[in-house]
Amino acid sequence: MASQGTIYCGDNLEVLPKYIPDESVDLIYIDPPFNSSRNYEVFWGEAQERRAFEDRFGDVTTYMEWMRPRIRELHRVLKPTGSFYYHCDPHASHYIKVELDRIFGFESFQNEIVWERATAHNDSKKLRAVHDTIFVYAKGNRPGRFNKQYTPYSKEYLESHYNLRDETGRVYQLDNLTAPELRTGTESDYEWKGHRPPPGGHWRYSRANMEQLEAEGRIYYTKTGRPRYKRYLDEMPGVPLGDVWTDIPPVNSQSKQRLGYPTQKPIALLERIINLSSDSKSVVLDAFCGCGTTLEAAARLGRNWIGIDFSPTACRAMAQRLEQLGLQEGSDYYLRDMPKSPELLKRMPPFEFENWAVVALGGIPNKVKIGDYGIDGRLYLADIEKKHRGNFMETLDLWYPIQVKQMDHVGRPDIDKFETAMRRDKRLRGYFVAFGYTSGAIAEIKRAQNDGFDIRPITVNELLEHERVAIAV
Image (cartoon, rainbow, N blue to C red; front, top):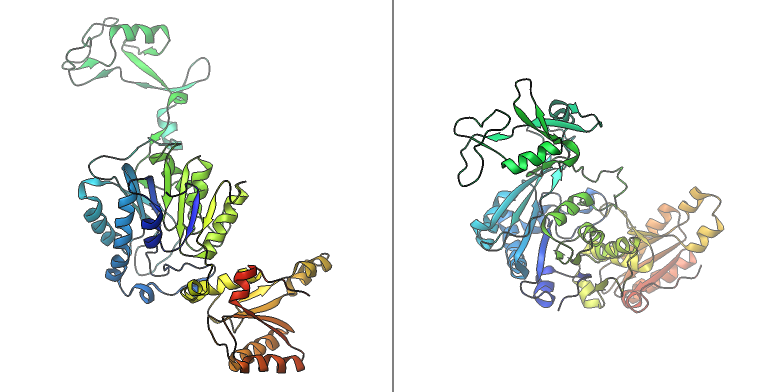
C-alpha cells in the first residue's frame, strides 16, 4: 500500500505498479517533458545543460510510445470518480489528446484549459507562443469531482454594471424579476403592484418570495412602477472560472517562488487545480513532480499526496521544500528509493549522476554542464566561511573544484586534465569522484602532489557509505 505523503525516487513506470494500488487516487496532475528544449532527465540550470528533445525521443511518435504505458498506469490508479490533468504545450498537444481519448475514452474528455504562461515573447516569423494546454479527463462516463471556482470581476465590468449604491453605501445593480419563458406548475403568473409578467413569461419568484424581498428592501421600482431586483456586489462570488486562464503569471527570474528548476510552475496554478478537483480527504498524485510544486500545494491545502520523479536531485529539492513548510521526514513525509547502490548509479543519466555525486560530497553542482572545462561542481567549506565571514566576496572565491566521472577506471589522462583545470582556476586542492581509479591515475595524483596540487580521489562506494565524506581542511 502506498504511503500518502511519500516521494518515490525512480521511473514512474516501475514505481506505479510496485506501490500504487488500482483506483486509489482522486486527482492526478502531470507535467511531463514535452517540448524541444526539455527531456525526462530534467536538470538544474541553463539550457545548455539539457539535451534536445530529439536526442531522447527521436520524434513525437517515439515520445508517445514512451508516454503510452505511463498514461495507462495512471489510468489504472485513478478512482472512477477521479480527475486527470495532463499539462503540455503545442509541440505535441494534438498527439497527446488523441492518445488520451484512446485510453480514457472520448466521452471522458472534460476540458482543454489554456494557460497563458508568458506575456512577452517575440518571434519575427510567426505568432508568439504564449500558452500551455492542460487536458482534463474523467474516468469512464462519470465526471470527476468538480468544485466550482470563481475569478474577480474586471474593473470595466464593475464600472458598467455595479454603479449604484444604497443608503448604507452597498454597491448593487438592477436585475430583471421576470423571465421570457412560461413556467408551468408553479405560482409565477400573477399581478404584482399593478404589473404582470410579459406575455408568455413569468415572475422569477413566487408571490411569497416577492413579499419577502419587498420586506428586505431588495426591490427597486422604476419611474413606471416596474419592479427590479437589487443584486448586491458583496453577495456575488465573481465570474465562474472558464477554460482560458490569464490571471496566473508564470514563475519568472524575479519571482520569490523561483527555485532554479527549468519547468517550475507557479503554486497558484496547482492550488487552483487541486481546489477544483479534490477535497480534504483526497489523494493527489504527481508522477513527474520535478521540484515539488504539486506536493507543496497539496500539503498547503491539507490533501494527501504522492510524488514520483526519476531525478534524485529533484527529490532532494522536494524534501527541502517540504521541510521549509515545517514538515519532517520520517513523520510528516517519506523519501523512498533514493539510489543506494553502484549499479543504480551507473544507470543514471550522466548529468544526473554528476549532480548526485557533487551534492553527496557536499558541493554545489555547476549550472552549465557543457563547456565546464572539467569542473562539475564547487565545494565551499563551512570553516573557511567562518574565517572570512567579514568579507563575503572573499568567501565566495574560496572554493575547491569537483570533477565527476561515471567510470569504473579513471586513468592518468583524466587526472592530468583535472590538474590542468585546477591550474587554470588557480586551485591547489580538488576532489575527483568516480567508481574506481587505475594505478596510472594514482601515480599521476602522487606526481601532482610534487607540483603542489592536492587531488583527492573519492570513490562512489565511499559516498554511499558515508553519504557525505568528511573532509579535513
